Image 1 (cartoon, one colour):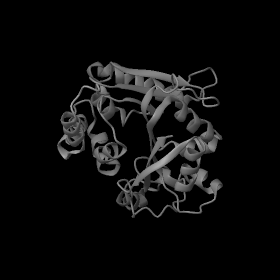
Image 2 (cartoon, rainbow, N blue to C red):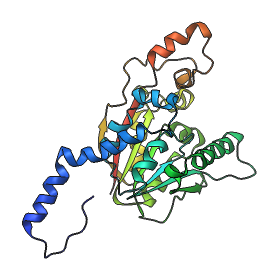
Image 3 (cartoon, helix red, strand yellow):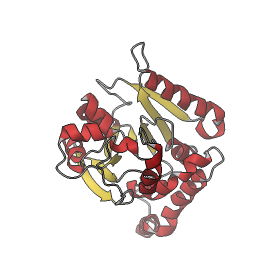
Length: 276
């Protein structure tokens, strides 16, 4: 990120910095950091195999990740993306992992996810020692001090919020914690245009229109979209919704596994929003 410059700085130096920041070589530094993280020993071979479906390098570069940013990952689950974000941000930036608060009423799934994420951090302190855990109430989500972070990232979560009726509040929470001009990056299973909301929730596939509407209502503008996570082989009409596909293969009969493995992971939208 360009730092604020003194008025005494020469026009020539300013121009050189601007040109350098726009050159492929500068961007490649972050790309190289992402590649090193992707190849790290802290990642399992099973997770590395999923890179072919999730395209983390292309996705994060499209969203504009920089090594000195303050970044919140929303409900990181098992920490698949944290494996890449944490080492990239460790030295110059800051990473926050935002998860549902754990109470006596919390579902066992949330408890397991929290325990697994903490175990991951403890197993690899040289990777995750500077990741800060943040807990929020989904009914009134707050992710940190207002206007304090550069980027909020969420991967394959919007359908859960739509089902719970908390999507609008979540997007408002993202807008509150982001600095003006900050980035919201959303990757989500993509439904066919015009799919009724009830069917979206049941299948796990959300329309781009729904996601964009939630973001616009919260005060964002759409800065761009990418097809990096598109999958034209996904017909989106599976009896068990997106969960029939990899990595779950939930309720898929043994004789049909090969068919679903051949499809790969779901077709996904990749959207970049900017806080106004």
